[in-house]
Image (tube, rainbow, N blue to C red; front, side, top):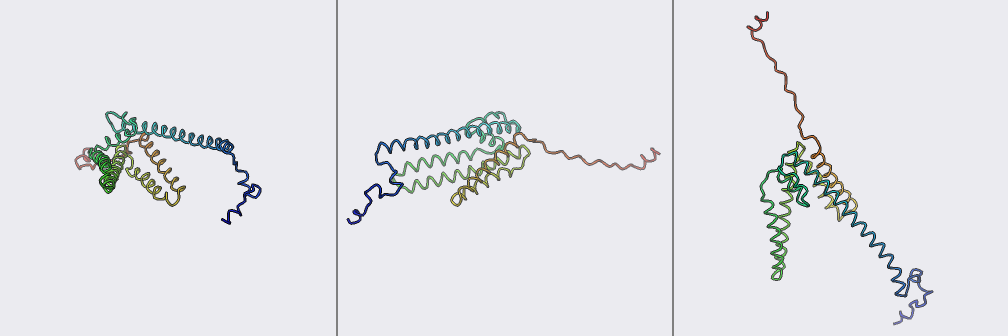
Length: 229
């Protein structure tokens, strides 16, 4: 109890930052309210900016994928405007692949819900459900890359373009525990690269350069030579 006797109960003996701290609860509330208001204003501004950027990207991608759908001769390119699934529908129809990846994704969702519901019997079932879901996402993601590759090829563009944002995105994700700034920059470049490649595929020329056929060299027969003479 001796240490209590040495405490600086006199406000003048306290450090400067503690002396300025209001001891009255009402004064504390009056000082904290402007701070909280400023913080809420910043958060609201960031949310509004994120919504506007997301809406602008949605408009941009919808127009771009719709243009790609028209170039590849799809019957309904306007499906690109379907929120969330529109661009996916465009590349799926353009690639002309089987629909089994959607079945795999659905199985992953259903298994997650099923095994989560059985968590009251065993927590290991939840782990199994999430593993199945992650595997279904991985398979579906790989098929999405393949569909993009075939879509680029359909408009006479290099299929490996889709690998650039994918590889950059993976690198940015792996670097996030090490350096968040570098991770954010790489992830931003990945998004921009995809937007640029999609715009080139949508509005760029889709015709391959034609090669001139070599001139045919005809050899004259002796009869033709004598007739000409």
